[in-house]
Image (cartoon, rainbow, N blue to C red; front, side):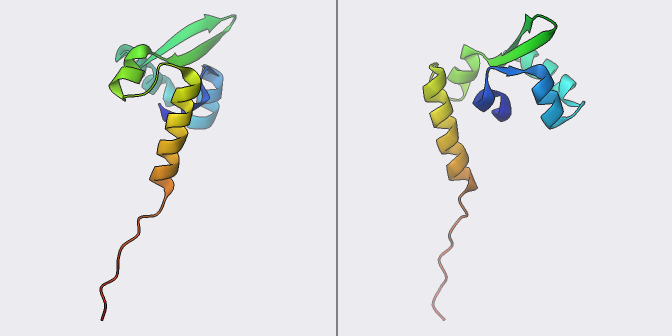
Length: 88
């Protein structure tokens, strides 16, 4: 879901290439939950997140702003936690 949100709009084939064949089932679940929509574009399907996704995760509906918010969240998550050592 984070891959779709950050890369959107993204082709379904790209998601499958990155996540593997098992992703078809996951995409169906995400669509059933109203978090993504899949639209036909020729023979392909374009995937993007829904307004419900943005509301649920407290993100902006503006795509550029959402991507900045996600990038910031990913960077915060990737930072190693610092633990203070007690003096000996």
